[in-house]
Image (cartoon, rainbow, N blue to C red; front, side):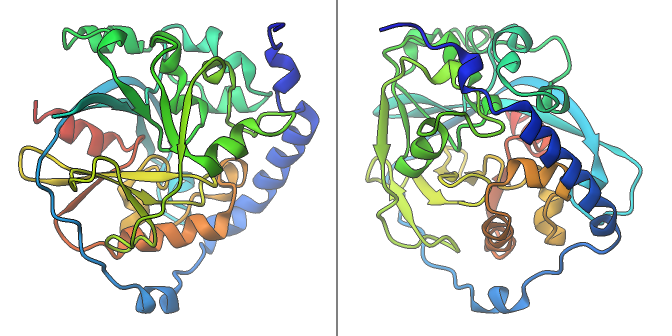
Length: 320
């Protein structure tokens, strides 16, 4: 089979530039008057029981890269001139039956190996600071190699959550919802934020979230059937975005929330991302905002870690 030219799958530059311009134009008004919380949705949300966990898992943070963004665009309407540090990280999970990764974020030299697939100006907006720590180096820090990983679970397929696949053997499968695979891989052009290079030649184990409601989330999937790793529906940022709810061996319950939010500040204040960059990267802004409400309504005792939340990621990493 002839090798696919990544340029042929890249989102056309002109439409992307126009979307950027539209998002920029919409942003000033929303910074002054952010979207209001949906009080009706909040009043209707109920908390379904957690499945009992008969085993627990180990959780290790693999921090790989950093960047900064204005706080006021991460959580629209925040009156602040500060820049918020953002993190790019993978999460190593040790279950009695498997060792797997949630969101293998970055490969070494990601700027040259992956970011060049993204259209202008997106690749300029999202590039992490140099240098980054490749996945192979991050695993080596824990005396592991890619051959020690049984499979990968992705919260979604944006480039900064899958680039580390380039440093895992092709035999390591990726588990994800069917809707996410169809969205990212089905069209002639990759959606904005998706680089297909790390995803080529991969085996995908696709599934449906066909389990019952869990906490405030409408659908779920118990990955091992023992309550230790429960996948929950966080659709909105992408069509198949999921959270990974863990029963951790330190007695905590942790929800790895991908990019449903970029910071816990959004959950606390019930704020979505500003139009720039939210219009570019959230495929369904209404569903994404509803997911923030579901995160806001979680009961106490659930530690939410968004993939880019520097404070939450570093706090968890400091436990090891």
